[in-house]
Structures are given as structure tokens and as C-alpha cells.
Length: 125
Figure 1 (cartoon, rainbow, N blue to C red):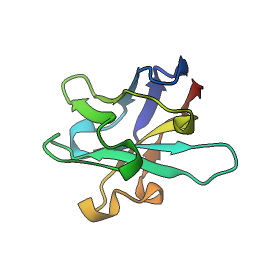
Figure 2 (figure 1 turned 30 degrees about the vertical axis):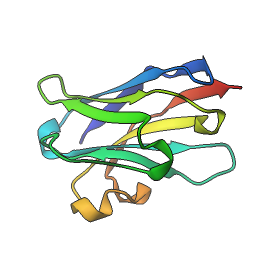
Figure 3 (figure 1 turned 180 degrees about the vertical axis):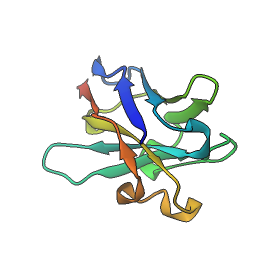
Figure 4 (figure 1 turned 180 degrees about the horizontal axis):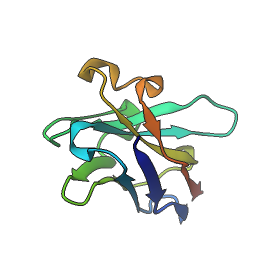
């Protein structure tokens, strides 16, 4: 069983930056692909970014390309999401997730096996 704890959310003005962190415990972190998924009020969960177990491959959704960067440090059991040039439409609860599905399925928000409790990101205009 893997436990995930996110941190780093908050209130920021449009154009600002935040760095989310997610620390894993209770399992073998390095065998899992990790992802970030967000959910805005009244909307379904939306895939944001994913990173392979080794960190050598990443994918992200079109709306965050060039602005968000996912990374991981397996020595620290931690995955990060650096968010730059934030927009009001990025406002959501951001969830960290771990999964072992095939790489092609990791862009689906529902494919992950373990989830954190979420951290709120609010971007004001």
C-alpha cells in the first residue's frame, strides 16, 4: 500500500508560479509511474502530467505544455510539479497519483492505483 501526501498548493496571482511536491511512503516508490491529476469545481478529474518510474519519460496535457514540468527524485520518494505562468483556469485541487499501467494509459486520470488527498491551487486574475 502506497501513501501519498501532497504539499505546495496555495493562492497565487495569474502569471505566478507554484511548486507542488508529493512524498510517497509504504511502498517501493521507484517502480511506479507518477502522475498529477486536477479537479476543478463541478468538473471531472483531468490528467495533467505523468512521469515514468525512471524519470526518463514524461507526458503532459496540451493546456499546460511549456508551463508545467513534472519531475521526480527516487532517492527522496518525491515527485514534483513545477507550475509557471499560472492562469485562472488552472485553479483546481491537484492530486498526486501512482500507477503501474502501461505508458499509453497513464494519461487517463482513472488509471492510477493510489491517490493523495489533494492540494488546492487557486489562481486569481
